[in-house]
Image (cartoon, rainbow, N blue to C red; front, side, top):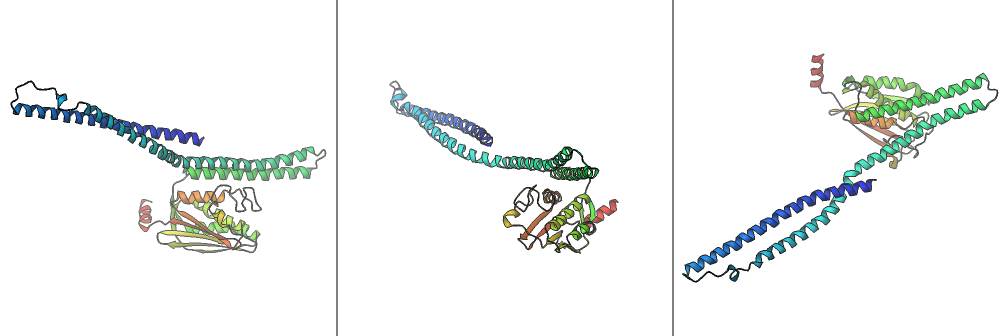
Length: 350
């Protein structure tokens, strides 16, 4: 599909360039012909005046005796030949360069469509998993000729669990779509980032305790201008990811500091780590550090870090990751702080 589009785009580039080139050549050809004819006419007039000055009263001979009228035809033919060669050269060069330019122009679109197809394929796979699980469980229950109440309860319980997972997955898909498109449900406001981080740590503590993971924090009080729901999602996903991929009795360190005009959030764990070749894809939807796109022992669908990336981008920040296998991973998020003048201005409006 893209090869055909590339050829068509190259043809359009070539058509535009050759139209301009041929039009310019036509103007040049006309101009050269006119200038040459004018020069020959002037030469004829000079010869006629010279004859008159010599007081030669015999009839003036035809100009062909003095000036070769074929010179004009020769100039035209040579000009036409040179312009043909130039246009042929332009055609070849423009065709090659146009094909390369068409490829560069279509590359981002091609990459986007590839990502879109992969996203749809992965989303369909993840949607299919809980549905298949529910169907299998129900079929087993139906095949049981004398199902007990307990078995029916277990079947219904499993169906509810899979439905909850499906609901969570769909909600995450909707969140990602909303962040990518910039469809925010509220306006940015000045927020106490330290309070948000502390609240998220409190929320995530029970999950950490299940694996005997300690959450250590060092937080400076800093104000940022953002949407509270987005910051909650950002911090929660990072801490949740660190807990999931940490070993039991591990430590997750959360730090918030000021660095110039920015706030820096770091979430560090001493877990399983990420290989270097996986780091470049870690923020891709559905990507898993175990090199597969199927679910691992750590529950999740591979959308958390993709959502984090979208939130950071929507708040004009940046995110970086460093990791070593079996040593741990560190996420570093940089967001702009609210200047004092902005805080004063907003407080006056309030």
